Image (cartoon, rainbow, N blue to C red):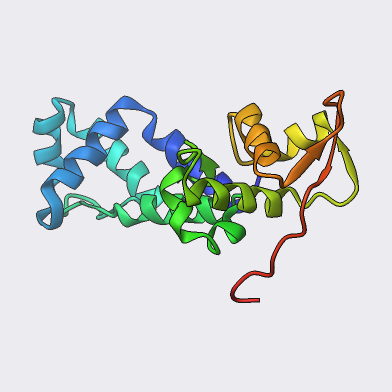
Length: 189
């Protein structure tokens, strides 16, 4: 597991506890004004020692600031930064930067939907995946599927898109695949 993935996982684990999530949500709701342990105790309907422990864990994880009976505030940017770092760590992220028009079809480095089949974006998505697969030689269907699965859940749809658009050619039996076209140079290359 990468460092960004481990950090994001730790934050999600921390916030998976219902009381900690409620405490964090209250801090976010209070915004810059923040909240004291006493106020949080009232909002969460929990004893002050338990609230103090909840807030201490949030501070320790970096998603809140504050100490003692002072004012606690959420640091929501930590979650956004963790999500962005996780997105950047996804294997297709470097190529996706070259195709900014395709970002709406991706979420956290994974293809969530295909563009309409007759659109320019469909052809661009096929080219993006052709670059991502980097087919050099002949691959089995299993190898193609494994590579696609790193960035898409609907492996069959992406494989079909690549074949229909001519970026991949498959043998008559449908068991092996090779590159169908030469990829053009990228604009910034």
